[in-house]
Length: 471
Image (cartoon, rainbow, N blue to C red; front, side, top):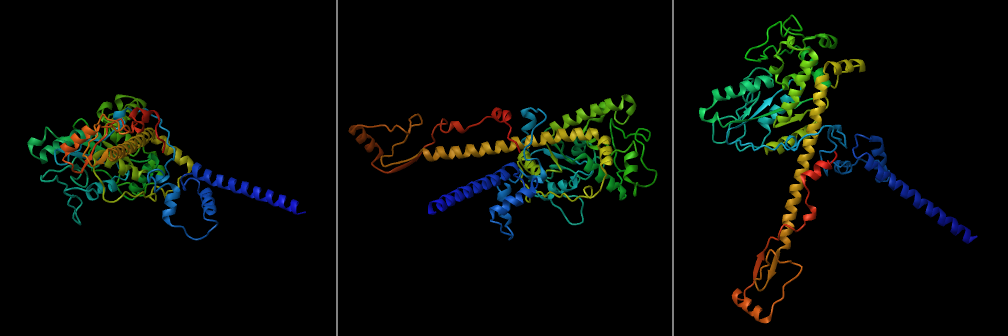
């Protein structure tokens, strides 16, 4: 009887152990398959319940950060971004490595192309109020513009709404800025800086549907951009070239259907048009080519200009936008960017068929945004990889320094070509001669070993480009 009960107890213990192992394996798989809490919230709650032994008390934010991987890397699970990003487009290394030698003390100028309803106002305020500078911008209450001057000079390094104002027109586009900014800067500053000045163009893009809805709500509240010049080939468009969607002073109170039905609405594909060179399609004269051909040319021009820009950010990726700007210009922001998902556009309840119509109206912007998002995330990956390689190189240099540090009573210094694993032997006579030369004192020497130390840890850009780290 005792043997039977003992055998049954052993089987129960084994079964219990198997069940516990299966449970632990399930918890591990939950964290692996769903590393972000926002993606698999139910599973994460279940896994955390088992981890805490079913405790119902509140957990600290620090443990949540560790569980979600945010403490290890705050960029991975940002803003509901895909944990594993698969690139769709092939870019050159020159397109992906966007570090510039921005000299704020010299003659370099950052030019901000501000597209409506992309979060550009917030980013523009970051530029004048939130960058660590030797000479910060001077911003005073009640004044719309700040004074952003170079250290030791009375020259500005920033051309934007909050520094120079709308000097080239309200929300000037690529066509206007590239032809207007140099002459405006020349009129403001000394002639000797005109030839050496470098212009670094930057902008912010946004999901086309959200941007379109946000502009509609803005116009619905009475906003207009009548002060926009739309200059191309030295002149503004005529009324026949660019008709108005409304007859009164503004378009306040317009419905979403009315906003979508206007064929002249500049909100349609605004980002593509504002980033393209309009002179390639005859400016606002739509009779020069078919609509399909015209927009195809504009899209390719916008993509080309976007690749050539020093920097661009995405409204949906605030932390990555901050990181890439800092990496590109070697400038640092004082406070981190904040992702605000509760915008007016997000509060609009739009039926699926209406969303589909908006996507059709903005199909060129949709294609541009997908292209920009792919380039943006690939640039972020390359920048992070470079940062890790630099950190690894510093660690290797420190290890070489520590391994090469030798303390000897005789003051013997290791030669760079001599292997530290094979200490040289000396005869008694040679030892006495060396001791005599050293004066018999104790000398501590520091030696940097050759570069063949830790070579197996070094990586190349080609290795990375062939095996892109997924986020």
